[in-house]
Length: 306
Length: 177
Image 1 (spheres, helix red, strand yellow):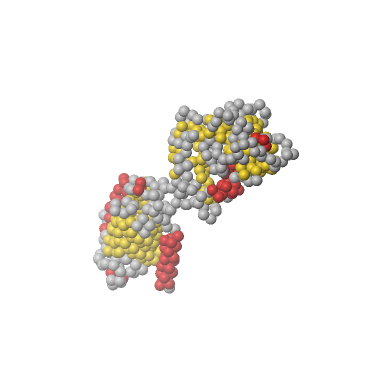
Image 2: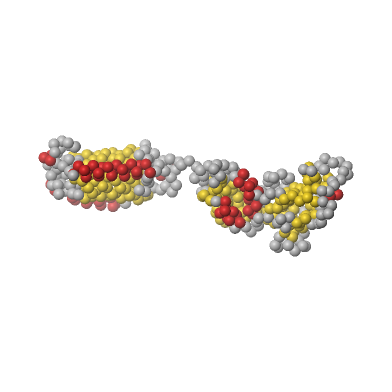
C-alpha cells in the first residue's frame, strides 16, 4: 500500500513536471522571439482601391459627364489629339474617358496616394485621374485646350489649388502649377463643387499647402513585428491629409498636429493585421508598433471611421 | 528587503541556539535553470526540518557568467507528503525577492531589476543528519523551471550518517515527530 502511494505520487509529480517543462516554460529572458513577418500589402490594397471608370463618349453625348462619386467633366473632342500627332488630325467619335475618383482617406490609403508635396502636407479635397482613349490609345490635350472639372465638396474654400501628379497608377510627388498655361486656383463659385479648367491629363489633386515652420518626425519600431512590408500611414483629420511612411520614418509633421496612425500588414497566407493609434505630435517621437490580427470587415470599418 | 532577510536569519539563529532540539538545519545547494540556462548556488536554513511542515529561508545566486545574473532571497514552505525511514517526498511553495542585476541585457519586454517571484515544486530528501536533497521548481513569474541539488545538516542530530540506503532506521535522525 505504501509503495503504491509512493509510486502514484512520483507518477503524478513526473506528469506535472513534464507538462510544466513542455508547455508552461518560456525562454523569454534570454531569447529574442522571431519577429512576425509580412508579405507585400500591395495585392490586398490594390484589390480594394478605386478602379478606373470608363465612359464611351459618342456624338450624342451631353456635357457634363458625372462620375460615380459626383465628379463632373466636360471636354470637346476637338481638344483631343493622338500622342504623337503633329498636325490637326482629329479624334473622331466615339472615344473613351477614364476617371479614377479618390475622395475618402480610406481610398487614398488603399491607392497609396498620399497628399504630400515636396515633403509638405497638403490639405486636400480629393484626387482624380482623368484620361482619354481612342481604340486603346491614350490621348492628350491639344496645346491651349482644357477640360473642365467640378469636384464635389461640402464646403468649398477659396484657397484650394491644383496639384498635378503623374499619369501612372502609382504615386508621384504632387507639383503645384507645373506650367504657365495651367490654371492654379480652384474656383468656389459653384456651391458644392470646386471647379477648374485643366490643361493636362493625369492625376489632379485639389489641395492647399499646409507646411509649418516647426515640424517633427515619427519613427516606427517594433519588438514584435518586422515592419519592412507593413504599410504605414499617418492621417491628419483636420486637413484630410494622408501621409505614407517610407523606410519607417514619417515625413514632416507640423507641431501640434493630431494624427491617426494606421499600419496594415498582410501575412503570406493572406491574413490581415493592423495597428491603430492616435497621437498629438509636439516632438519627434518613436512609435512602438504591435500588429494585431484583424479582418477585412474590421479594417474597412476602421478606415471608414477616419 | 535585505534588512528583512537579516531579521529572518536572526530568527533562525535563535532557533539554532537550541541545537539539541533538532529544530534547525543548514545547507547549501547548486542549481541549474533550464530556460535561462544558468548555473547558481544557494544557501538555506531549515526550521523544523523533521516536522511535516518546514520553514526554509533561503538565498540563491546565479553567477555573472550566465545570461541571467540575479539573486533571490525568500522563504519556502516544505510540506512532506510522504515520510519514510530513508526519504521524504515534499511539496514546495516559495516566495522571494529577486534582484535581476543584468536585466538591461535581456530581450524581455518590461524587464526590471526588482521582482517578486512565486515558485512551486517538489523535492525528495534523505532523513539522516546530513541529508541530501533534490528539488524541481517552477517559477510562475518567469515561467522557468530549475533543478537544485544540495545537502542539509541537522543541528543536534546524534548519528551523523550520510545519504540514502545507509543502514535504515537505526541511522535515521532522531526526534522525528
